Amino acid sequence: MAKQRDGMEKGTLMKRAMTSVAALVLLWGAAARADDLVIGMKAAVDNADPHQLFTPNRNVDLQVYEPLIYQDRYLKPQPWLATAWKNIDPVTWELTLREGVKFSNGQPFTAEDVVFSLRRGLTLDGLRTYRGYLKDIVKVEALDAHRIRITTRQPTSLLPWNLTSIGMVSAAAAKGATAADFNGGRAAVGTGPYRWVKWTPGQEVVLAKNPDYWQGAEPWDKVTYRFIPNDSARVAALLSGDVDVIDQVPGNLSKRITANQGTALVEDTSVFNAFLAPDRYYDVSPFITANDGSPLPGNPFKNPQVRQALTLAINRDGLASRIMQGAATPTGQLAPEGMKGYDPGIALPRYDPARARQLLKDAGYPQGFRLTLHCYNDRFAGDAQTCQAVAAMLTAVGITTRVETMPSSVFFKRATSGGANGGPGFSMYMALYGTPTGNSTNFLITTVETYDKAKGLGINNRGQYANPAIDKVIDASQTTFDDAENEKLLLQATRMTLEDQAVIPLFFLKSSWGIRAGLTLEPRRDGFTMARNIRRR
Image 1 (cartoon, rainbow, N blue to C red):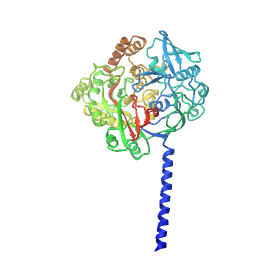
Image 2: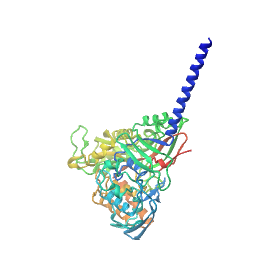
Image 3: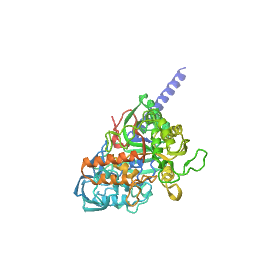
């Protein structure tokens, strides 16, 4: 018995020792990743080049490639790499650059890098570029190492707002660079708090701390943005501890986060506007037919009564409260309350299906017609469900609507050039737009103004809507430096856009994040998940 007890004691001691070692290994592993941050992101980055504009890309890029003028959480312009800016005359601006800033490779940040970055942003080709935000610039020149002069083609009060959008790259590193060079290669050099390590398409982007950042090193050694498009999977990853933070928490899953002691929910209003865009480009629209499937002569969306019927058929309150589960705010405007371009005199469009049916009858479509509504299904939580709900509402008033959803990478190409002879691809689509500048003038310039590639106008106007009268007011709003006159013209252009149903706003998303216990997150109106805004308690 003594030997048996002795053996048991030895076995017990051995088990305790192994348990202690295992605990130490776990502690070591926890310590090893204590300074790492993993963020679960719904939308995937689709390009490593910082001058290819796409909201998920920009969310990550701005932590590596900083703008001249930064935006605070309310998207108001703040001095950053540029410490001051002023008008010399109506078409000439001078900017003073911050001294002592270095790129992550140790090279100094100078005016030559700014000149290179802005010129590159103006000339780079792609589906989504910064040309719409830089379109007024005709000349950029370095006055000395820390001063630049920008000449615009016309007076524009938007220049400081627009310079918040694009990040600065190293002229030496990025000259002649390919996309592969930016993906952790020789061109991946910025002034930001993090360095770009690697982008794995469809999976993740990995950033590493820039220890020599001009504002002081960040607390996170490594930041991983992991792409998890499925909402339930993203929430499950947070609850299981696989990630530290997630974005775009859908309303129907938010209670799982608030009910869990180890996680918390953070919410805020965003600038992201979900809207419909009916085709006005084609005389015979490609995805509209008669009820029997035969071709429909003419394009019904060119009739203002039909367009008015569209907006009356939509129950925006229902979309926001039921389909989006409270994760959206219904709207009939381009800008949310409190942001530049919001008009308190514009009421939420009423939901009136009976009136919508009557308008269709008055327009010559008493039996309605058939329509295919195109949407993406990976851009925000609830996008595909919203598309289906809108289709049901339109069907209820006589526009029998089927839905086709697709990944955003496919959607953008088809919407822009998937039609006959490279024209617009859809009869009506639902999309999401959030101005990078926080100024709704950019919504009008990029999404409503007549498409002109050379001038950088209408770059998101995928249906090629055109209205010269609206264009004239949009242009006039930019050329005045009088704040009151600028606001007056901006609101006039907005009203004209809405009255012509160039776009039909549905709701603004609420930005929402799930975070693990022990962290804090400062929300931003653009919905970006910035590592610099996440800290330990």
